[in-house]
Image (cartoon, rainbow, N blue to C red; front, side, top):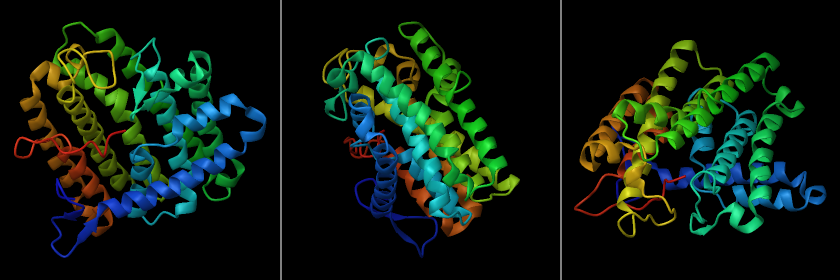
Length: 325
């Protein structure tokens, strides 16, 4: 995708890739599957089901599950086998956002322009809704329907890998480190440590899960893993740049009561220009890692470009935030 348009011109001159159509189709498939999983609890769960559903719908661009599907497609994975894992990572992402918005953490009133979960349902129900989504993720990916499509040993391995990525060694640990780093002087090494865990671990795991379900070979999985590391860090740097440039007034951001300048981020530590340079370098590394996969990796190439484009200025204007969340 170009920074202002819908079609993506790539290093493969014969390919015109419509990223928007791809994202829309994959997002719709994920939405249908998520809705189906949650509907199983609708009648008997009451408010907690509503809060869980509110945490997932309407969603953002469903980037994490789409990355999982796109990685699986490279190696010929079947959509039916990939979707339960895609839904699991989106449930985990949804849980992390609900908890991240709570007063004890970021204390945000809005998420994507709508009241956050705890503003609608109260802190207790919001906390439990996040817990419910996290638990349901592992219930979905280890269910009997999945075991008919994916070998049990591989499912066990993927449950182990995903739980590691979102636990104290990954998402939770990164979030805790980020909380402790607020309003403290940190260097760029600390910032990268936080980002790789808080955001990068789930993005990398999403890609690895998709590739493994589809039968990627060890060397291919290592390349997808390196791509995921670069993309995860790029994604968070882009978010940080947009958050800071989107502040409505000094010390006040559009949706949060916390100043982004007081957080441990690339732009707050090394400045916006240097952060954009690192973002562009990570984008280029992403594209290099995908090169051996040829045309089948076109969706991941387009996503890599757009992740960077949303936070790189063009004629002094920022592109929109369409790839956020």
